[in-house]
Length: 498
Image 1 (cartoon, rainbow, N blue to C red):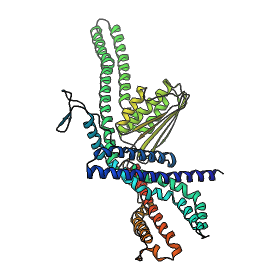
Image 2: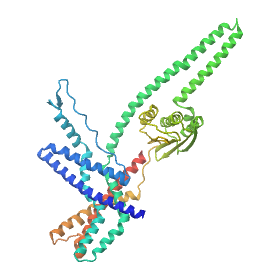
Image 3: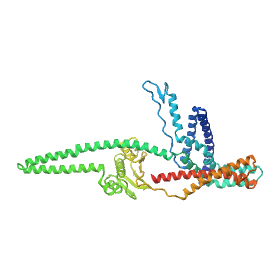
Image 4: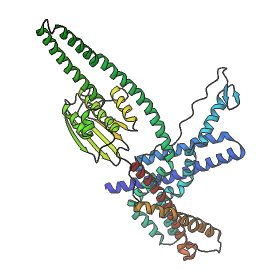
């Protein structure tokens, strides 16, 4: 019963995707008309509405890919330009022209933003290509059923074979078609490698600024702690020893007492310096690595802390330090703010990335936007392009997830059979779709006697249309699979390279 319901759900989704592909084609043709009117006629006002329509359709495609296929696709668009600002005289400058109102400068900014964004043209290509790829694949059971019913209506009982075939393959075909739609959307609608690098540079630039500010504040704190703590005690020790020297001959007993106080003060100063050094870079972290340093944290923590470590090698010292202090802050927050009694820390490697998960049994309610401690962890991790994700519902438990990419070097993804198959699909889909499919269909419709090397025109008459339609479906399917393998390969290489 459950499998039947899943098959019906997948069939409904594939049908919806086929209809959405046609709606996307309409949006793509609208954008094509807008492009022609803009660049051939000069009617620029029609371009922005067409782009907004195209982006609305592709945003829906991304949401459906995430909801139905489990493939999350980030938006690749460049940030919108800020509104134009007036000059000191109140006029708005756009190039060499001045305007009294901001309407035209704002339109020009948005027009250039849309036309120069590669994602605009990739959306355009997707809307035109989707009906021939994922849309055609999703509609295949419906096309087979419709073809069979038409044959039955024409008096050919063999049409029932097509209907029966569609019913048989739907349970496994429809879910595959839905997943394929998500992979094709990821290949065409996701950010390119250049866009990802630009976004990453922007994030790292902001993280570097925050890290520099944080390090400056840390240096000021260290200077203040040294000045108010260890330095003051060392000055007092020097004064005590000087007083003992003066009393050494006249009152040896008092001199010995002062020297004892100086010894106690020196021990206290040494403890403060050790505590300060431990806050900068703990010796156990430098000597034993992240795993043993986290275990030492667990021993010092007031919580019953269970630590699991699975690391293939040591990461770089700055990265280990960032992970160590993040775990330290999370355990301290769990004890201080979450009223937790027990915690679990898992430190592991996922490919080249270092992943740390900290879970506690506290009352939850942690919010990175409100707590300065969590914001400090985000700033520290941001310098390494790391991320912090916190799940802390009211009532608990609280789980913090840390990932630091490129912690264990770059690994090259091997050449898998799946990638070879993807390359084969890239080479074969034009042959099946265009000469053997669309061109043969046109020749069949116009009644041309030319058969050439078109397979669909050489078979017996009852099988010509099935072969032609099958070639079109095969070409669209091969193109969809090629795009899907591109998305999978890009994702695998991104994970391997961090």
